[in-house]
Image 1 (cartoon, one colour):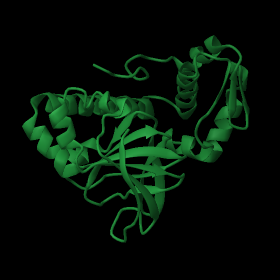
Image 2 (cartoon, one colour; image 1 turned 90 degrees about the vertical axis):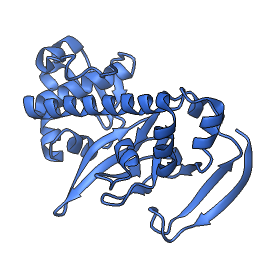
Image 3 (cartoon, one colour; image 1 turned 180 degrees about the vertical axis):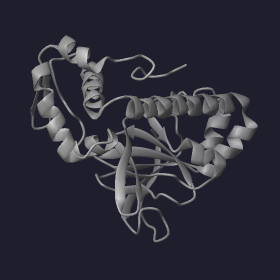
Length: 258
């Protein structure tokens, strides 16, 4: 990536609540990790440069607020490295909506409509994020049919994922939700016998619609199914035992990419 200049910006009006932030301005965005994203891959070089003319990259430490629920969308965010929590608040209650890992965009629907965010977001670890102005994304949506189709495809994927999440919450007990989550994480880890949770237990509990106390109880209830927990490490002695309880279903648990 060709770097034109490196500046430090202090912005009182930004979503970062007067936080000190490092902004890397680039003369182009031909980095493969950005250019090859499905959302941008259909754009020719001229239109890609046009879309990215006001974009920039941020390298952020953990626990930095990125967007705030209720604020109007200013940027499309693209997570390149690290992890981000999407969460929501109501009446002094907070819940984890999702934990994003690379490479992910958020929140595309608000960006296209230039509407208010329905969720907040914060980094969970050191993260690298591309910010593309919402007005430029909307303008390119009207200008480039291939880009519009890519946007619709990504929104469709997100919609179907939300349907699966709702089915998981409404059709399964908390124990079954945890069992299926552990089987999915095991698969992502390469079907290894042991793996890291990759998320704090209280956030995991919230994302599964449980309290931390219920999560601890559920882990104990999974012991007869060959599940052991050591801090943040999970050991599954025989996944077939756990699958018998979880009953994974491809219309709930498999990623919907079509």
